[in-house]
Image (cartoon, rainbow, N blue to C red; front, side):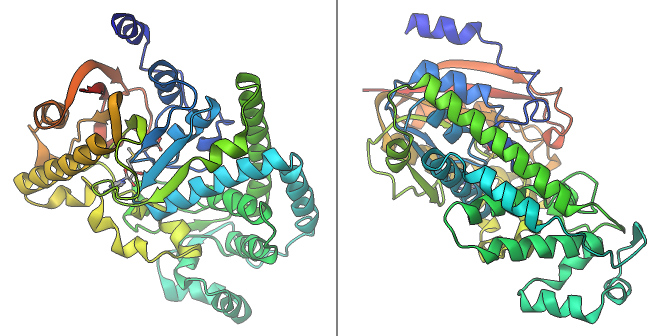
Length: 422
Ligand SMILES: C[S@@+](CC[C@H](N)C(=O)[O-])C[C@H]1O[C@@H](n2cnc3c(N)ncnc32)[C@H](O)[C@@H]1O
C-alpha cells in the first residue's frame, strides 16, 4: 500500500497539456460532452488500482471515458448514466469498436459509400450566408413548402429551423435520411455517431454551450456545411477507431475484444438505485459525480433531441443529481438534497464493490451563489468515511483553471480514493 500511495503522489494530476483539440483521436472525444475526464486520469488509475480482468465501474459514466480506458487495458466495464443521450452515444461507440474489430474495413467502406452518395452538389436554397433567426414566422418564410413537408414526413421538430441555416438544415436532412436508409449493423451506428457529433458544430448558436442548454436560440442563422463536416468526422472516426484497436492489440496480445465487451454492460439508470448491478461484483469504482449546480447534462443534448427525440429529455432532468437548474432554489434545500442523493449513491457503491477494493471519485466545488460557503468536497468525503465501510487512502487537488470552458468558474477539483474495509 505504501508503494501505491508513493506512486499516486508522483503523478502530476493536472494533465494541463491535455485538451481534446490536441488529441482529436481519443475515441470518446468524438462526441462532445460537458465536464469529461481527461483520459489520462482513468488510464493511470485503472493501471494502478486494478488487474487485467477486474471489473471497472463508472456509475456517472457520461461520455464513457472510463469505459474506453478500461477496454484499452483489458478490463471488463460497467457503465451507468441517467442521461439517455450519453448512454446511447456510448452504446454506439462500443458497438462500432466491436463491429470494427470483426470487420476491420467497416468504417472505410461507410466512408467510401457516403463520400460517393453525398458527392452530388446540393443546390443552395438561400443565397444569404446569414439571416435573422429569432422569429419563427420570418424564418418560416425562407422555407419552401416542400422542405417543411419533408421535415414533417420525417417526423422532425419544426423548431430545428431556428437553430440551423436553411442550407445547413437541408444538408442535415440528407444525412438524416442516409442514417435511416441502411439498417446494416455497424453502418447505421457509424453514421449516427458522426451525425450527432457534428450537430453542435454546424449549429448557428456560437455562444457558450449553456446557451443551447438554456434554449437560447441564435439571433442570426449562418451557413455551415453539414456534409463536409460529417465527412471530416467520419475520417476522424476511422483514424481514432484504428488507433484504439492498434493500442488494444499491442497492449493485450492474447485478449479478445468481443469476449471482453460481452462481459461488460451499459445501463441507463439512476445511480441512487443500481439494482441491475449485483452485490460485491465490482473491483473498482471510478467516477465523477456532477458538481453541485454546475450543469444540466440532459438539456445540453437539446439538438440531438430535436433529431432523435427521447421522452427522457423532459422527464429525467428532475432526477439529475445536483443539476444547475437548482441554482435558483433555496440554498439549504439544494445542499440537503445533494447530500442525500450522494449518500444514496455511496450506499450503492458500498453494496456493489468487493471488499478491499477501491472507490475513487473526482469532484469540484460548484460555484453557484445558492451554495456559497458550502464545502461539497469536504462534506462528501467525510460522509463516505463516517457513514460507510470505507477508509480514505489518498486525496489530491488538480488544477483545472487552464481549461477554456471550465464549469461555472470552478478552478480545481479533488481526486479522492477510498478503500473498502474488510
Ligand atoms: C461529471 S459528468 C461525468 C463525465 C464523465 N466522467 C466523462 O468523462 O464523460 C456527471 C454525469 O452524471 C450524470 N448524472 C447526473 N445525475 C445522475 C443520476 N441521478 N444517476 C446517474 N447519472 C447521473 C450526468 O448525466 C453526467 O453524465
